[in-house]
Length: 391
Image 1 (cartoon, rainbow, N blue to C red):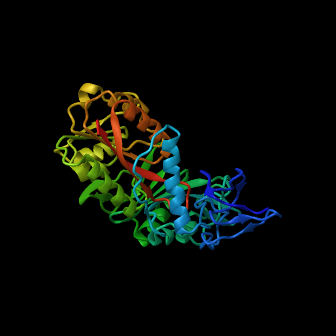
Image 2 (tube, rainbow, N blue to C red):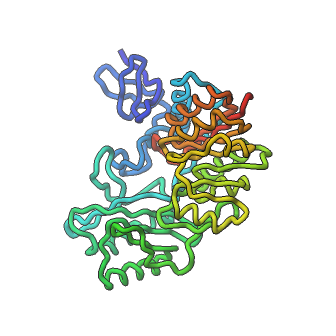
Image 3 (tube, helix red, strand yellow):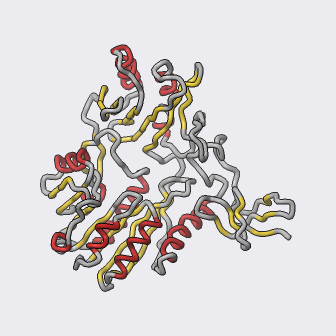
């Protein structure tokens, strides 16, 4: 008897009512008696020739309706595992060709240089001939990057090329490229100049060294230009950043004293005019401090040294935007504080739900959660949430 696909599992497989996992199945598909997959109305033709080999995307075969449903269900399921439920707002989904940062791999293989993402569940590099997620300005650098890296790379030794689109063009950080000879540096700087890079840096193992930067590299956040240290974090798409910023602004409301924890370069601190920001990256904290003299910016590792309740109680609202590991140590203290409102931005529904449970047990309520899909056709989803004490 044919079995329908009723949902998409966390890792992207379709799932039947009996719990059978079926690769590339989406709701509306059916598994036939012979094991073949009969496509339904939400199964689309993947737009990219590299799918499903390339690891950059996992769900190009799902149409937008099925994909949106999958991302929302990831958030709902994570909350439900901790006995939590709240209003889940409509998902904001970034369009194709909108990713403004990516880490590509490069490898000299014989006479050829491969540049692209790793294959699914593999260290093998899929040589990128087209891409439907990267901004066109970044994809336009892939072929020139192949050419300039030819002869620079050691055979069969992969290196990283981190590309980020900032104010003046693309910022390129090469990790593991030897480039120790003067001729190598001259070749790379000529490449950077010819293709209008904002900056080109090389990390030979001792940290990034900028070898081409015609003017200070900056990124504009909420209308403010902030120095952009090589390899810094930036929200994956401009559209996703805008959605998250708007949600955070709503979550903190009219709070006058705002603390931004895990502040990075100040994406949310600058948007909300926060009075305090804490960031573990010394370079990011220094860049934000140089930008905003009115804000108290502290270089602080909140995993090792979370703010205590006395520190927290100075604020009308707290913003949290931790890495994938979440903010367990800081949330444990926050749950015992008197802070009226918390805006929590997360890139991991599982650790968010764990932390949300601690906040709820401490007297907060979850007013709403807004999912944001910045990594188009991947299994990755981000979110912004609003917590209100006693609400």
